[in-house]
Length: 108
Image 1: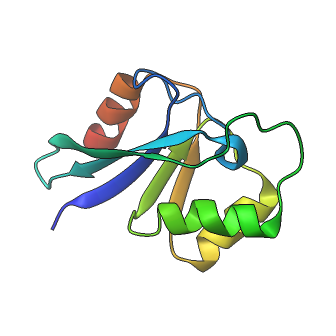
Image 2 (image 1 turned 90 degrees about the horizontal axis):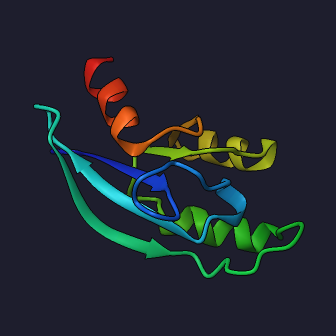
């Protein structure tokens, strides 16, 4: 069974989205051999985010990626990180290219 990863990216090239205001997640399945397959792009409905988000909004975003084992975003707040931990979803924050992230995850 592949590892499913949600990536907060505005353009498919860079991990450049903050979790709470992410407009879309690119969802990939990663095989045991390290092959990445784009499954789908999931939009969050967070366009035009300008400030604090509600617990309801946070829950909706987490529900959107609940089938993923890992989330990669550029930034992540304390509340969101605690919610992801409680649900057993790993996360990493870094503003890097998707290609570089793929290389880092494959080589460990």
